[in-house]
Length: 398
Image (cartoon, rainbow, N blue to C red; front, side, top):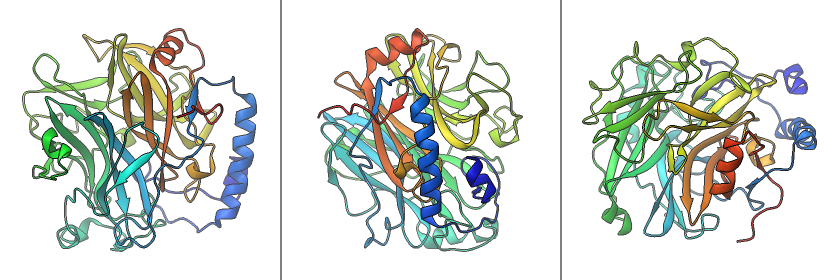
């Protein structure tokens, strides 16, 4: 990444760490050339990978004549329901407001159903404008320079999806300006999803007013009769993660800022391959060996790129880490992971269908891509400390 540093291509990552910064516009060709060199160098050094990036990526992208998803389509939540994989993705149009779109697939790779309208909008543009005083600098339009996380200035961002007791829950980040970042949720009955009736519950906040929080995720089942809310990945003890158990999803019963510090305020320290630990990516997946959790972090040897790690948590006490991948399992080496924002993979959806683990992610804050692997093989390698890295090679024939 030295070439990019020299050209000062350092983008502010508002939702992925870092505050608001003004950055210089950079020609796409320059980014692609530098990224291509990085990707080539990294791939040569890798052990052959078990896990595959789909050779047809990206699987979903912007629709340029659409007012609400013309600029970016990325960071999807995923659930399996009625034998199909359903994605709820973040979409941005020219107005800069984040909305939730929908697409689904039978095989997890080919998405043959995509709706031409958003299925969930937390706030319309006039409601979002009420938060205008918080937005600084205030530009109520799509602007990927001032609003470096995709270019949006407001709305619901980065949904994560789980199915609990037959109901689909979406948690998401509500961005109302740099000083107002909170976690919220909505839900819908599984039957309504089957019938494409978008009777979402009114969204409610999970984090408290004045607390800066992002990327909390729910476990896909209750534990001892309680909702399990994953809120912090690392508070200094490398052997533990941090979960709140709740009788109900109420913001005054979730952890306060003091109990769940903003990750941007925490110091860097080396854990496995990373020195900057971010947050959970997709909600945990229950397996026979433990809860499989993917997470985001910054590589100590490659600090300017956003990568994905993996943990296996204890089934009875999921705060306890059993295994950790010693290397990143997903890295941003492809063109669609560096299209306008170099070095970003944001893995917000993970499901298992017919023995295959699918990981859905946003590439470059613009596209949706998928990687996949046989679940049992992945768990075996994770437990035995072997290479279990998502790669582009040897694509699965589907």
